Image (cartoon, rainbow, N blue to C red; front, side):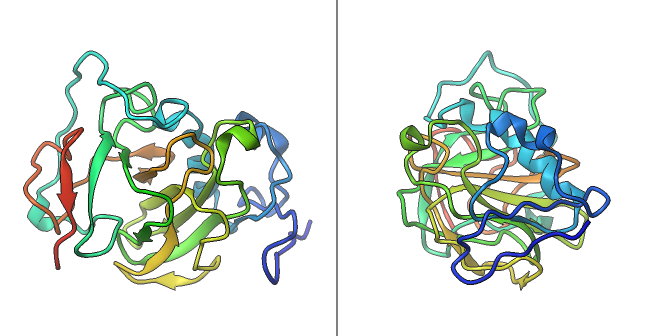
Length: 241
């Protein structure tokens, strides 16, 4: 079965996956309560689909800042000096962590998003690639207002596959703000989209580095020391690298 590819200003309903090259089963996206999605495109790689399903519980439902659950032991974290990753926003920008690792309903210990982060970024803020790689999934057609859309989920997103086999995901992006295409190679620090509040009430960026649908513990080499991960409520500035 052939898969459609969208053209122009992404007006078509497009749905493809890496499952035997066929159209994505409705059951795979059922947690989002939407199957034919305007502006959604996935490369012929299964991991983009796996991450999409895993994000439905991320951000504690609405994505609003939440107090930590009962403290849980996260880690261990990789050495920051050897980290291949940079913060997902441009050098010079500073944002607070509004949901960290092992806290909140959506990032609780033992969940797929245990090691994901939410950054409190106003709508329209620049989002950059945390590492070089190939774009394998994106959507940008969702409304910027969760209440209008009427369902929880990732909203607009970009997924990048990296040479080390991991994939990074950037969700709740501003409608029609994605600047990259499926199959495009992007460089570390390249502007890929603008943050928003699609799929959530409160504007923020949901970010994680995933392996088989599970967020992995990461550090960032272009900010101040964080040996135990970024801290909830703290502000981190993206420094040169």
